[in-house]
Image 1: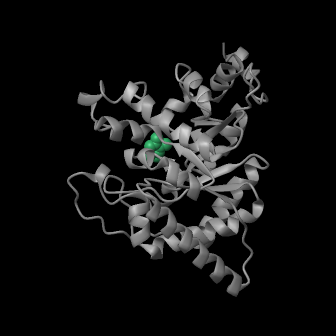
Image 2: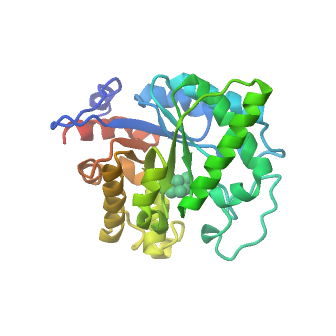
Image 3: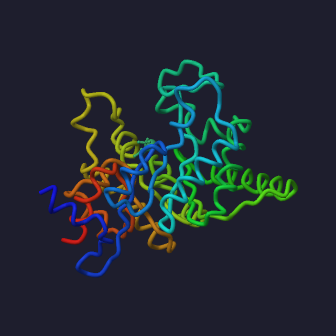
Length: 291
Ligand code: PEP
Ligand code: MG
């Protein structure tokens, strides 16, 4: 079977009805690039930048981040690379941020919530993303979005950073901006959010835990923490409908993106990008071509 799957490495899968689907990789470090290229990743659907910030004593500098994002973009060009802004919180601390104890870290000060308060951390990342975007295939994804005000605030910060870079004479580029659909609030507001951004990416890991109110790490509620639950599928379908109606593209980057039993549902609802761990890519490509 492995031999048969290897044949899909160079395949750009199209369904029998002619829909082109991008099968991309979820990455956290540059060290994973060769493995992703080896399995035939059509770009990166989710680069988790938190790994750059974790397990070290100081924050990564703007220059270091710009180099990392640029190296990633160049490695996959002309395929897109979707880079997610920092998504850490009470359960994943980093040096340089004082995380106070929270009773419910998954409902707490994480992702874009923390970043909008800690602009000393967020702005260097935004500036690094703008600088890396000169490569041309960079897209930026915001995690844990719960309303349009957060998107507006990030856009304003990007505008500030652009003006700064212009004044400093530093080259920078433009990019598509997207939001993770991983909170129930984002699902309910999807029609409005779709007018603010260029794309959606469904984070099925968090969306499942928040729709079902079932901690994704707690084995006692694993029976509820199922992406195939009708409640979660209804949320996914609603986000897809909002994306279709606004004419923006939508991808899936949670673990469920790789599931052969769910790929038909995603594609039927208009998902055009599936992002997953590299090892799952050949099987997902085969699954799409057989739809
Ligand atoms: C998700 O929530 O589905 C997701 C892709 O992000 P993470 O697993 O990093 O929270
Ligand atoms: Mg998530």
